[in-house]
Length: 144
Image (tube, rainbow, N blue to C red; front, side, top):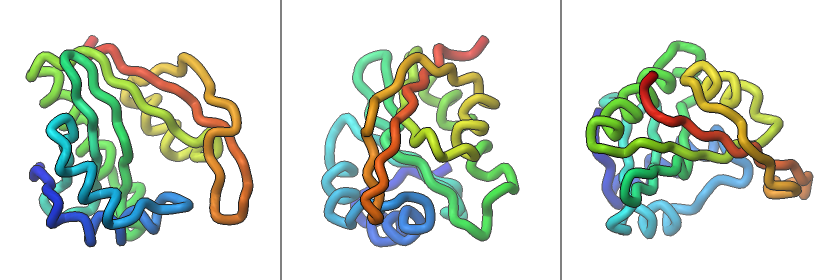
């Protein structure tokens, strides 16, 4: 697992484009990675990455993506599990995320990692085709 910085932004955009519609810009990634509360981590081969916002004992997954050619190989799951365990050891006890209700693969992954649904944000996402979808709110309360 490696820590990301603003110089990783161009690569993160390329990976994000394969996963998110619309993808975030390089400027967005650079800005986030320069914030003192944001931590970015990736597999050593950059097959997957995740950005967290960490404040006190809580963290929010801001975005997470795996390159298409590495999907369904357990790399993203492994990275997320490693990150959650690392942050939990750093006294982060609660983790939150939002996920598009239509992203069934991600929802399944989060449920496998013991994230639980606790709410919905109506009409939260709008893709490049102007299709609207809800965000499912999920949380993880540490290692059981």
